[in-house]
Length: 70
Image (cartoon, rainbow, N blue to C red; front, side, top):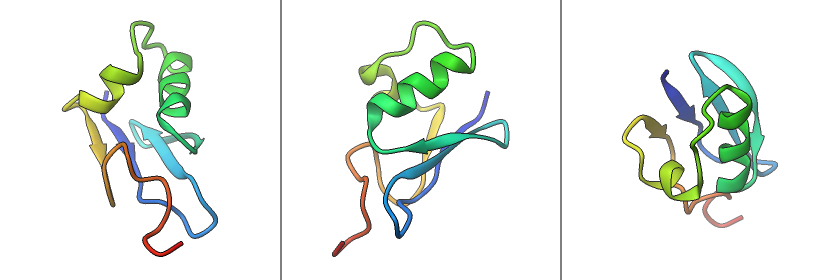
C-alpha cells in the first residue's frame, strides 16, 4: 500500500495519502500513525512510520512539519 506524506502546507501540517486516497492532514508522526491504523495497518507505531521505506516523505522527512522560515 503506497503511503505518501506531502510537503508541509503553508497553513501547517502535511497531507497523508494511501493508494491516492487522502487520509487527512497530519501535524506530527503520531497523526500519521493514527491515519495508518484507521486504514487497516494495526502494528504501526512512531518508529515504524519514521523508518519505513514504504512511506514516501516529500519535502522533508518525519522531522519536518512546517515550511522553512515559517
